[in-house]
Length: 188
Length: 134
Image (tube, rainbow over all chains, first blue to last red; front, side):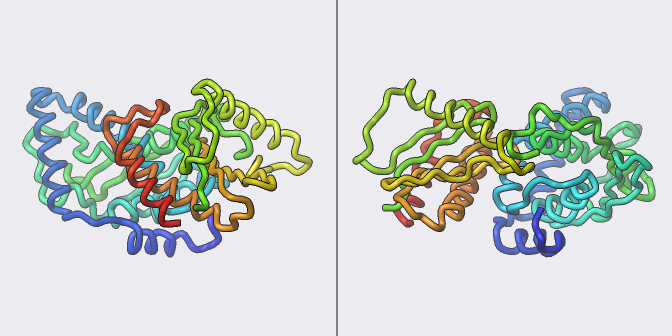
């Protein structure tokens, strides 16, 4: 962890160390990818969700190095810190949004990220009968992959999405276990 | 030229990249480089275990009269070992820049297989540019 406030770290990395691309290009690319998956799996949305999660996982495994290298953030001292870092630095750095962290469980192992302005979903209106589709499910995979590389096994899933007519877009993240054997020596 | 050579170890201590930046170093056999990497990995673990103070960071640098070796271990367990001329005070900055090059040109290449040896012309080129600018 750094001594600077996380919000400032996120702002600084976003301003000085990140190459920007056109947001619409990203939204359109992601949209055509999801639409193609829906066609390929003949609107079997459970399988589409699963594929998006897998793709995100593979991104997360790689993205974590970029995150660590550019932000200079070290090991978090608690899962609460991890949640703050994900929101204020991780999401800020790659998507320029800062989801609200809330809804902590009593044991401190489950929290929710509320994404108020989801850049992937800018132009999206879901087709009829697609209640099972979590359009932005790639986020869940990214979180799972990135946290696994830093020795935290988590389960991440959407519980609501404004695209589905819900009041908020909420991702629930649950810490399953810390992979103690995988923590590099001198890092505990 | 401050940088003499660079070693990158994956999280199990396997050597995935080795490169000399000067002609004056003796070349070892491929196997010797692997042994060198594995040995350092082991010593790093032991050093952190025998530390009298808990939360030791392990070996950060080794200094001799003719060279210094600096180690950066990332939270994901990758180790970057940089061999430089002795008394290089900014080695930490060099290492963090090299980590960024790795994040860009190795990890973002979709065809790079994780944990496997790094074969990337782009990474080589960028390192050359960076090493000659230091």
